[in-house]
Image (cartoon, rainbow, N blue to C red; front, side):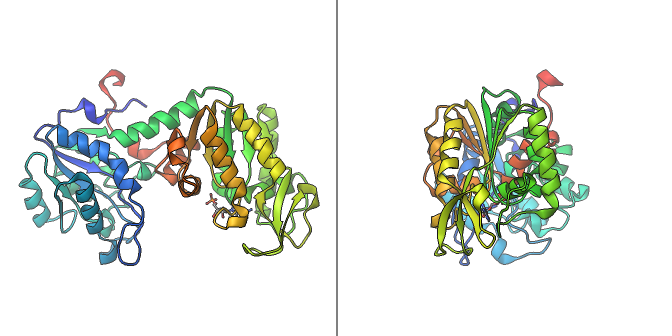
Amino acid sequence: MNKQTIMDLDVKGKKVLVRVDFNVPLDEKQNITNDKRIISALPTINYLLDNRAKIILMSHLDRPKGKVIPKLSLKPVAKRLSELLGKEVKMMPDCIGKEVEQQVKQLKECEIALLENTRFHKEETNNDSEFAKTLANLADIFVNDAFGTVHRAHSSNVGVAQYLPSAIGFLIEKEIKYLNEAIENPERPFTAILGGVKVSDKIDMITNLLEKVDNLLIGGAMMFTFLRAMDYQTGRSKLEEDKIDLAKELLNKAKNNGVNLILPKDVVIADKFDNDADIKEVSVNNIPSEWIGLDIGSGTIAEFQNVIKASKTIVWNGPMGVFEMENFAKGTLSIAKALAEVKAITIIGGGDSASAVEKFGLSEAMTHISTGGGASLAFLEGKELPGISAIQDDKSSR
Ligand code: AMP
């Protein structure tokens, strides 16, 4: 995947339209509760400032579904970005239209405009070519740095790239570097740790990883579908009855591919789905019919930790238990700690595992935490990412 990067283009004095991922969480008063995504976009923005570009930023926020929803305005982002840069960020009234065109035309070198939420227009998610062209007409160059949406083909990341010289920004470059390296050229042993609820959401990822990894560790509610495939009784634990046959196939595939697939040997169970439930730890062949498995047990933690210690590359996607409740967070926390301590490349897929690592304050100790849940999943599934494919190849690979 040799794509043109921002450093391959001469941006001085040019209007550069940058698709960033400013889809930040907001509370009911429109305060940003986590600005990680804004901070992740800073290297590209600072590079453009240092190289005297005229910067036009655009992003979606949440899912307004083609309607103008004032509480999903990017105004709070303009304010936060301006604080982070110590510089004015001009908030535009929309992402297209006469008023925006005029204001953008007047931008001087090193000035920054932020377009309003692209999803206020229904054309955005349809990858409408007219809408894409209108966006492209605002600028001379297009840079995609929104890793969180690379698995989607929308006007602001794919459509627009048809009409302008294009490149990827530093965030996408970094994400590809770590994810691609880990998947295609891992230092071995290569271990994947998977958790979360649904096998059905993760079939393609498991199938793809079974071609690549040496070890596959499975926790989370997903383990119960696999345990049932091995004829264990799992009580009232969450599982997908209709995916038991598929789990059998995946177990066979692991065997055929020589992958060391390890399922938990013990679990923390509770008499109800509640932090204050009665709780005990049992072996997986001893789960009473009325109880629910909510975390991996201590024997499993020890076994997973040993595999982690012996690995050189580790990819983690999905929590080991219901980590949102303190009494069922130990499995997820122990895995996060083991990853923080091991001398290996550690890559955390976005979404829940990334929030868990952040919640435990261990982010700094990981090699790379992906900023995109769906996008990193698509990457681990081996799927084509339209937001990256749409960008021009670099000169050496053309
Ligand atoms: P996913 O979105 O598929 O990665 O799933 C993440 C969710 O899985 C988290 O909210 C966890 O609380 C949940 N989870 C993990 N283990 C279990 C379990 N044993 N039973 C029910 N939910 C679980």
